[in-house]
Length: 350
Image (cartoon, rainbow, N blue to C red):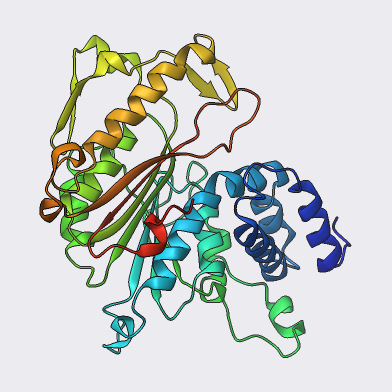
């Protein structure tokens, strides 16, 4: 598809996604995401090294399918967020900040940068332990960040009509993407992030955690529970915690909820998409229990069953959205929001 026009490339992507899970549930999101992929292609045109690294078809489409419910919820929140509140200060103090936990290369963030209105969203922070430290050299063991901070080749800048002023790809993203090297498993990380990120961020924060492995999901819930300026939270748990936690007789605690590690741990793992461990269908009940415990740990005030509405600080929901096929059972999304609630998120729409 190297010599294809953008129109032909877009129709090819559309065909590839025609029967994708969620395509009919989130038609607008998929259409906008295809447009976003075309914008990436235009951005990196003339720089095949970056484009090849970013655009691996199977990977990008899988990321889109998994992200679509989250993109939908974030778009609802942002479009309903009071624009005037975001315009009260010149430096954007009331604008939204998005935290993309365990971002990998950042496909979710890249989609969001193209889909959301830049006048409402100040920046998107891509948190991953594989990044280099900011302003330091990228070494072979680090994740490559040329698609975010890389220099635009001079001949490309000069040959554009009109010539473009941007020297780095950083300024070409509609909503700025910032990397942050963090190992959220480290015990000191919650305190450090609270001090250096959450306490310093003036506007509302959205914490997104798609495809978090093992105990990383616990830490994501902690970020929501421990920081009142996190207004919205989306979590899609992934693989179960490792057996080491059960062998240590650990009790997991999030919010006001505790549960034994033994109930939810597994000794299987993925290595480059190959599963080694017990048959995966054995794990389905454990995964359901894991998701249920994570849900119970998300703290939005009084427990729903016997609560007086006045004690609710927000709302949460566990949604099963069929995005995996061929027996995949990791279709659980946890959504939480602090008051005041966004109507579109809770009125029965997916």
